[in-house]
Image (cartoon, rainbow over all chains, first blue to last red; front, side, top):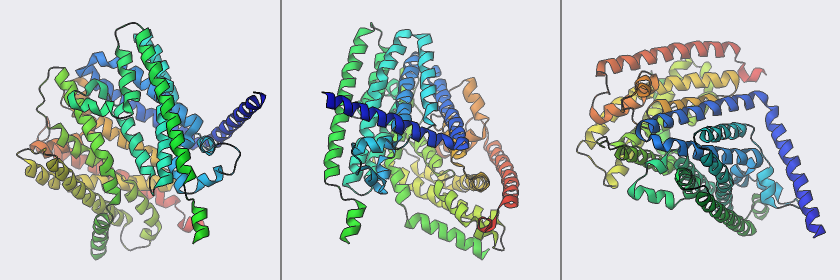
Length: 270
Length: 256
């Protein structure tokens, strides 16, 4: 038991140091960071205002569930960017050989790779997400609470997708494209008001993709006109499933890692 | 003139001989197109409004344009060749403009045929599919010309401040959100009326509308062409100002 506590303590120290250093490194290029923050604010503002205009004309009742869902999505996406931006770059680091440096340390390589980068620009996502959740709270306090509960679920789903992308990179050439495609599809379906708009067969796209967790469930829970308990239970169960999905993707990654051939080995052979 | 012809032929050949970036984009584009078309159709039918607008073709056209505007490949090619281009006896803006124009035209031509081909294979055909394609080929020079001017401006910005990704991202999102890339600007309302006055709508929404129906939305063909020419003139002036300012501070061989 004591040994486990020591290990957890070491991990915690490692995570806090890694996070501090990578964020400081990103922040040291101040002009780049400020430009990035400004760019992302404008970009998010543009997309949200256009979608707001569309929904207020055609489906005003979908506005506040959409706001809350976007808030949860942006906060989850921002957390990944700040704490584990290395995951977003995982396929690239595998393809260019940087990942090999993570194999020599007495820590899980995936954790090392995830913590190897942080993005200061992701603070914009976090801040904007929080603003959207606060706006939702002004309209409906229960919906804002559900949006907050949705954040971990979305975080685990996106993390799993990045890890699966990494596993694909380990097993096949340009496998990162598979991961990119998965993330792109999920993000596209989640960042537009697809749950409000999709009808008939097109809804299948939401059910059969990870957007079920990042778009459909958050939107429907926020839109639920019942008490707070039912949607909360649904989201908690979905979060549990998302955690299982993450462990599954970690397992797949570990299996792929065992059979992977790295460039140094290939170089040695030829 | 011979040199310009060589540049154009080389760029067109390059697009057709190395189609991987375009084909890779064709993997993700259907997701975007289907999502946006389903949202627009679904919201309209929920609101009890009729769906008479060919949304699927509209989004194929707009996404093709958005994908080709100020492409990373054109930009990096112009940045790398900037120094060498200055030493040639042809003005930089003409040779680089020709290069960007040829690349975008070829890309729009290729993607236009590919998009319509995929739609036809999926069984999504209308009676005037051929006419849409013909109109698309007609507008390609105009769009490619505006794009080449934008590419020149962004190249100069990159050479001046060492970065242009952020501004490029803002431009592409403005085209998407304000130009009719997210939804057709057909719905009456002050927001849409405002958007229709902006250059983004003239370039994206009105171009797609022209391809679909043979006329721009809410204005005459003459006024639309006049507006495109006016925006082009503004961009020509802007590109010259930024180029002169970049050339003044540019150090050949990094000043070494």
